[in-house]
Length: 432
Image (cartoon, rainbow, N blue to C red; front, side):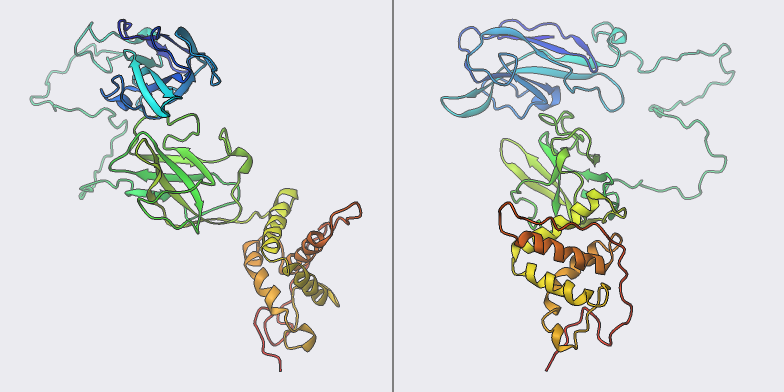
């Protein structure tokens, strides 16, 4: 497709969207082990891709040997990009890309220095129909498929200078008397489509930036993520580039606004999906040569609801939360066991009488469990949750060895008490 060479640049070529891309290069005089080739949208280079300039993260890349594990410098070749994710413009028109020969210098630890770049090449959905620019300076974008047989008798005296690109097929007979002066745009910054998502539901995040860059990406963080604009963030729970994927680098160039969907398909964090029930924020961040993971904007809090179907996966989620709670405070293991014993004397119903002397101190494990009881309210009863907490506590407390007992939580459906005692199970009652 292109030859990256100081003395010879090929004529622009066309590549069908979704096809392999082959890049040839010659670098006879000063090849290094850290040489690599990358593919960029033309606007990402922006005329600044001269030798010696720093290169941003590429859309796709390989080392000069054709993979990502070169041990020796290579002076020339072609290299193959198997079906790289290059695409056309959002409106379906051809998009210009460029190949760049760049270098990571092992000696100087200099990152991503451009050695040279190719002439642009075109990615198109139909290369056969693509017309070279030099044939006509102003071709029509959409020639008429069926010209009229009988032209109008009374042509418009003053036709519009800028006709609409997508005229309405069925215009309204009664237009509104008070049209909106300015249609609603996406709000600036980050926002989610909904304030609450079901368990395993894909999460839609909208963004609108005034100064977008090619390294912008979007991550999901726990609600306790407490940084502000301009801060440097840690690793996200889930993330995508602002074009909606997690491949080598953002394949969509500079994108100032749009909506991305974060879900389980084809992403490097797929094994961690879905997020556990809880409260989260969407964060717009930037990865550039100037900064790593700079926070650009933070969305309002959104929630992920607990699952409603009892199965191995949902019970594993609950158990994991209990394990986390007990690991942080191992004394809770015995307290949860004691709570379940007192609750299940006469039948497990999620209630204990805190005015009884024998139940003194149970308000502490009740208070520790209450957030998880609320979190999984649609899945398990309070009585079920107290029982599982006791089993997990007993399991964690066992010494390591060959004589461990498997405390399984294999029954549920216990009913909570209703108004059994004068004081609520969750209220702390002073006992003389």
